[in-house]
Length: 264
Image 1 (spheres, rainbow, N blue to C red):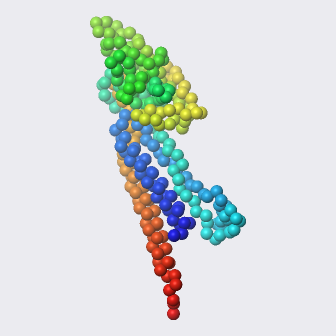
Image 2: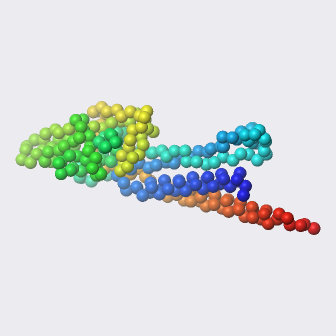
Image 3: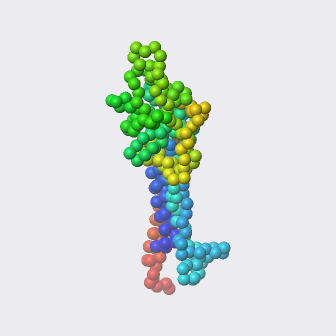
């Protein structure tokens, strides 16, 4: 089987399979609070021993010239994250918080501070404010602990609690929101959390830029219709590469059967 034809088709088949996996994961998280969809970035690789000249010929490592161009191979170069904001919907739950505009919540984890747009918070038995998966949410004074009472979070992230029997609320802390200098330096970890990689910087948001909404959550930014269209396209491309490989096999078999046949 001619590798110049088959190997590029096989690499394209692998790439389309990976693309379908990414789209499937996006669709599976269409209802996940604060989810940011993944975008596969594709590229091509040319064998390092190949030198392709302007006439379309190729030259291998020995300097020999072929009239058949050296093939290039499709690859998934990286998996980027789309940080477009999802729609905000009201839940009326006092510990649900949505960020309006830019910014991330900070979360304390065993591997360091991570960042998230998922504001579906809850409390532990010690009344510490945590994510649904149990990581402490950070305020300007560190992990936030709430006294018993009615919790209020204003649009600038200030948390106050009116304890039972009290006539006024007491300010407890402020959500420590940050801006990320370069979103391409954010790497997905798990449960809607992101790790800041080398070269990125988390900058505390000035008070006048912070805008949050209590009793609301940010929805996933996945558009199911667009993802389904992308899935159909990927399936068709995958089927086309399979057909190309099948055709190459049939040609190879036909050529093999002709070897040694006497013609009159």
